[in-house]
Image (cartoon, rainbow over all chains, first blue to last red; front, side, top):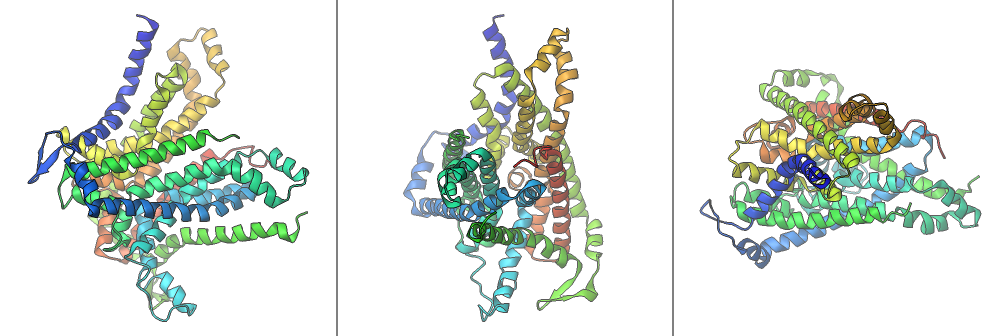
Length: 280
Length: 267
């Protein structure tokens, strides 16, 4: 047996399991998106009707674009809040720094559904947000403005996906050698110049990667819009989910999921590219 | 050493950090509070303090059933994912995999993709294969989901091991299997364990993939979700508090195991 053949055999033996459990399922729904459903029966003829139906119908395509826009907003707000937090933690020393990092990352391990539940109760009519604003005299009556609309989806997603942004930014900051900062300060640059010319550019790849991860996760989220979005907070995830439930059109749902998959994959590959461009 | 102007960024970012932490952790305390006391018109009625809702949970068969499902799923999927991660990491690192980047992308995909994609993929695949949805499909879903973290942790440790260790083992006459058994595995054991606990934490909370592949089975997060649709109750808050507590404990164990020893004090 030649060396090459041996290597291929081992490869097939090892790669078989991920191929079966990950690649095959994804391939199966890509294929399903090319079929069509008639009266709840899937007809196995290749057609692009689901895709033309999606792009031709503003209800669906508009929802998709709206979702992308919403997730870009989530990403932007999360970075604007997450960067200062990561920077602050990075400035700390010793075990103090590690403890703060732990506190920032721990929500990643807390149940998603639990966070949704508690945030929903905070944003509601009798929730903490309203109580606090009433107490401060900013509002006269409890406001409905914080729940069951697009804004509620935005706020909730930012809180849920914030730790996903803080961690990569912190890791990028931590990679910056102290010597670079000292050199910059020794050469007479002020702390603002050092930040702008050294810290920010060097941490940018990690920041972009973190932002993209948050974007990708928010993109497919179908429970947050359902729990806090009410009737106006419709996202593509929710539409896809309904195709596999009430609407019961699996091929069409699979086509929309394929478009989501491709968008997410582009985001993931861009994040990977951004990380590989890290120079420190 | 620093002037007042230099301290300003620290204060501002410190304030932001403080607010963010309040935002992230307030829910935990609120559910804890709601689970043990009654609150009416914004006032805490301390005289109603009791743990009766926790006791009720204990005798709620649907919650206990979901709990046992969650435990079964977590244990099996973590074992499956860990073994798979170990094999894959050994392969990519020591054999120099064919198409390594591609293989790694596939391993990471279920973790990075929106869960709706992974969930749907498994749903469609199991329907095509005529598999009944239930505990087995949940186990598969969780196994592919947590594979990425288990793989990453083992691989990082493997990359840190000096090659000379393996060469020494071969020079001393050990075969491949003996090297694996007596040299590699002992060095990898702690990374494997950390990966397993991390995977357990993720599996315990996994909701979005599960909802597609669960069929009529319930895991704890799914049960919780179903209870929440009905409304708010102190019993839900008790369950929420317990779930958060378990997650936090598991996260602290992971953090403690991953703590970078000896390099914390640099700088």
